Image (spheres, rainbow, N blue to C red):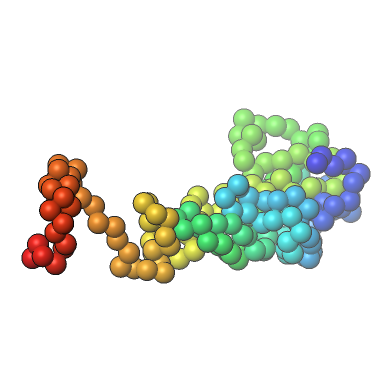
Length: 189
């Protein structure tokens, strides 16, 4: 959902009183509810999750430098056993918000450079980028999670000795001879 510049969201900080005052510094801290999921299909901060955004805004010549942290709880599923994974996040957030008339240099297309309207800064994109890059590519419930059995799907953490007898297909003819003679496994020994 795209917000208009005038819309007031939990991620929007009004900075009109800071604009064009180099050296001015202000801190903001907000408890918020996540309105759009932040993360990937595998793990992320879900809609409705409680979060904290604590930032510092420092006015520089061409804009406002923002740095701070975003804290929330991410949920997802283990990449090996599919159990639920909960991960407490404290993600560093930073970015330079350039004034609309600020001169652009070649390096200004960097990942941490953004534009703003001169009235307020919207941190949702900055937070989203920070959260996505901090999440594990393959979340695990435990670092040594053994996963699921590739033959029957049993959870291997519940049965560490779980195994299936695997017969070499070249011996299958002998197995059928054993069955036709009516021999049991005890008689073979």
